[in-house]
Image (cartoon, rainbow, N blue to C red):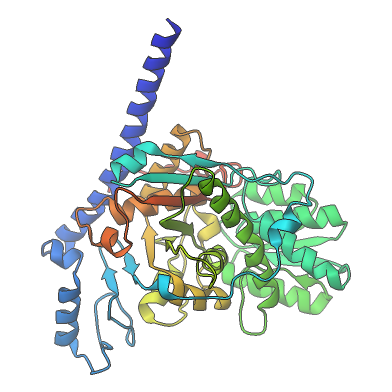
Length: 446
């Protein structure tokens, strides 16, 4: 009888998971259908191949260097070459990142993290139904919903950066701007050191996330402005007060501390390597949620290191309301975008980090923007799999579906993914970090 109940329960769980996979397929395909209905043409007009791109470039006027003077979806001065601007799915496929090399991380952030009382590698969880549905060998989720007692990965970067800062002496105060998780991570680190922390918060951060920062003893300063303005005000505070600015985005003249933060994030990728190696596996593709790009920088420092033999495809995933990396890749230069409201508050950033941008421009294989609907469906699918993901945590699964669930296989071929491939998705936050899904009704119809 117990065995029969177990079989029944497993059957129900499989059916529930398949329903969510079907829902993601429907959302992605629905967006393609809407684009065709609105703009006309067939699939080749929605998802152009290289011949189509080159033909349009010639019609628009192309110089001998291969640069287009005008092309749909690419700003003046943007490049073509092997890049495929998949407009309907709002993605950019470079298929060149594996060739980029970097020196890798300096020092050993993981050795520092191992000294922390609650350190343990976070789980790597399999999604066999997703792998089967998308024609992949294996899909695994790096589950960062509980990292060092906090519901997001950000504490890896904040703690390591402060560790490096205090090598020169304990500061009078720490200050930052945040969409939520970084601010709480810095507040926790400051509390443990007995250092005051002030956190500037942009408009749109969930009240529960603000309360969580305050619960760590930090002073929260609401700005009512976009993220970029909150960063500016935090920097002005640090300059005026003598506090140390601990920001996870960089700009000219401010790159050392953001670099330490990105170095701290590499610990999770070292864990992924060890966890996959334990089963004789290694990654063929890695999807990273992107706000300003510090986590993507960490991924590229790790996977594009000169001494690394395997070089997986690395893809960035952004909300379609704040796709600054996608816009920058299309423009061929760092580009600022106006942001809108999104449940993915931690990714709601309008300007890439300068240090991350260079690495992303040269080291990424793809970038894709996702809808709110796809994010919500992905979070429900992860919940069915026992992963209590927040919106940013569900973004990479939505991005994977957006890239691979459509009717054309060119993104799959460009990323070199097939039925033998292992793809790693980063679930960067738990629902406790951002409970927006519990309070926001998002329709799943296209």
